Amino acid sequence: MPYFTVSDSNKLVVTNFKVMFSSFKKTNKFNKIKRYKAKLIIKYADPQVYFTVRDPYQKAISFYKDKFQKIPQNADFSKSFKWEKPQRVFFPLMGLSVKCNSNEEIQQALLNTSFDDFVGLLANCYWLDEHIHPQHWILNHPNYLMLTDLGIKAERLSVYKMDRAGEMEAFANATGFDFSKRANSTGKIMAPQTISPRCLEIINRIYQQDFEHYGYEMRQA
Image (tube, rainbow, N blue to C red; front, side, top):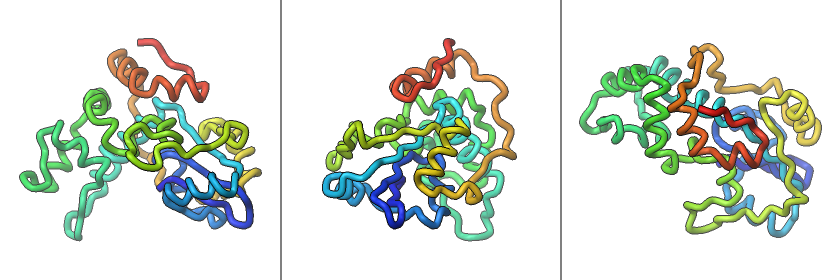
């Protein structure tokens, strides 16, 4: 889960998957905890909470590059292998099944999915996995039956954009985040050169409140 205590402090870090989560796991001062424990800490210890966010367009691109390109490209089927849940939620929409299709067939289907097609699929399943949820849901999740609202006081919440160097420097100074522990990079995977008007419309609709809450510019289709 994307919640971390910070050693020797009354500080809590909250993020989303594909928003520095893998790097945070490698920071020695950050201790990964589950949502229920984060809720208890917020309720009883009133910590300062540091929340990292990302440009919704870049977050969608990063997810596509990782789950639809990088992982399939590097899959080793000679060993025990299992497709991840963030990939499996797309399979029914793609006519795929881990029971009916071979790993090789699934691999090719993922690799052959264009970014435009991925975004079209995303519109029909974004609520099914935390990797593709709107980022603000992590604070007050509409789909959870329990622990819906983390209950963070506005004055105890600081928001940092991971794509703004100055903000991440301030985040590191405040929390002890170790920039040398960057992980799960998809930089070597070619990104879409443009985002089509149809994709812009879909991403804008799904993540509208993320754009509004966190000050990212929403491009017009």
